[in-house]
Length: 145
Image (tube, rainbow, N blue to C red):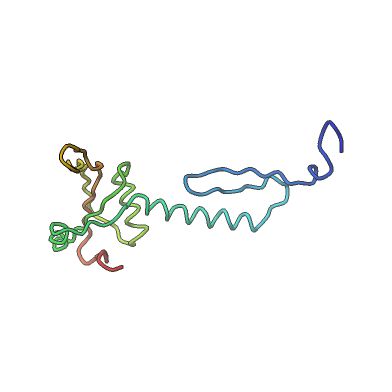
């Protein structure tokens, strides 16, 4: 073992670097030989990542009396992430439900005032909802599962 430089075992190791992307860690190989297994894994992780980002935009469908009445007009209501935009919501609906919405309306909802006990008051979290209009003849199965 040399005092300066690399030892025998350290010379033969391949250099790898990791890059953290939102939810997944993707390992890239810096060696000169192309490795098909790592290429296939990186393709799969990018496909999974796009799909998981869609689920981060749509938190859950809102099933209330008003939202069920909007079903007659081919409109569906979802609770979405606070940072979600109309284009991100549209892409998420297309990825998850395979339908193209014609119109998306978003509204920021203020958290309700709540009280626990006599003197303790507070507020629920602020949240965002989206009302999605679909073309005639298309629908989303929100009530199943």
